[in-house]
Image (spheres, rainbow, N blue to C red):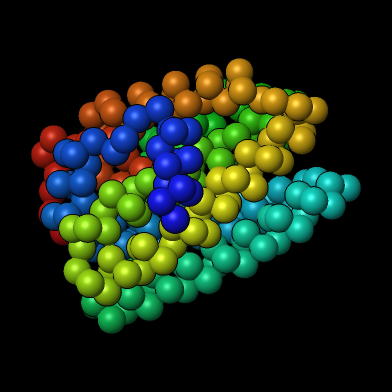
Length: 206
């Protein structure tokens, strides 16, 4: 797992800011609610790719497995929330996903390449954040988050390989463009705390 995390750290443009970790620790209910939303959205993204690109057998197989895993994670987060008396509620969308998807090209094959790159970066960031949070959490939640690292890292790798395949070779230049966008979203101050938000200077506890 250390090798996997090292790969993730080398890939991402920056670590999660300490301020965000502090935000998360005083907003653990909100963290869990948004985590559940993220897992559901990840499954939805995988399914939408399966519906759109029906002739790509490797993509179909990878996304089918990914969607099942993400929905299982969704169920696990809901179970943890139920045990802790945390209600699953609607949340306003984070600026992170919208910011990452804004530069996605409209037409294929560029659209597919970009969507897959965005997926890779989101999965990598999720993995990095689980690892960053785990040492500060209670034993049960830390164990759960540590248990997610392997699958999130694999999802990142799958998305990146599929992006390279769709691009007909290395997509390094396009990856670098999206990583630069991601760094700004992660490091610049945010107005609302979310799992993928930037640091919030005045985090309101739930």
